[in-house]
Length: 222
Image (tube, rainbow, N blue to C red; front, side):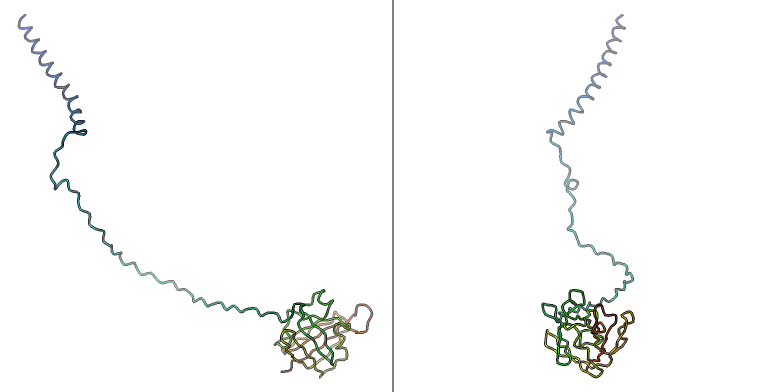
């Protein structure tokens, strides 16, 4: 009986020891850790281990030489030459100048639209200006306000044109007088010379719409 009790006491002591050891390992180790995190003094490591490595000032790094590539040929760009458009040589009323023949003159305006030809003969804007190289063309009706003055014109006569802008005077010598009985047969002359071409209806004395054209060709006097 006494042996049995003695064995039980020994087993009880062993069990108590195991329990106390397990209890200490669970509660003491976390508590120890929390004390270190909160306030326990921790022995610092030696300076060699704690010192942050010094950071050397940044040095400019040399870029490796780039591989030479074939240069792209850039074509030469020539400067654009802009020529200022010269001011049109007529006054505020659209008058280009005066056609002069046989001591008479008539106003010539810039353009050949219906409104212009109601007032006077008109210079064809697509043609050369009188006195300039090329063909200068003037259209007009056959009445007194227009080209009636050229009815008696003959080859060899002189026709002049005076600009209103600078009072410049240019003259032409008549080289041909052409009559087209039908307007459908009329054509402008084909020439490389510097000429003035006057075109009006024909006959001059006709009631209603005249069926033909009267054309004068004059060469510029140099």
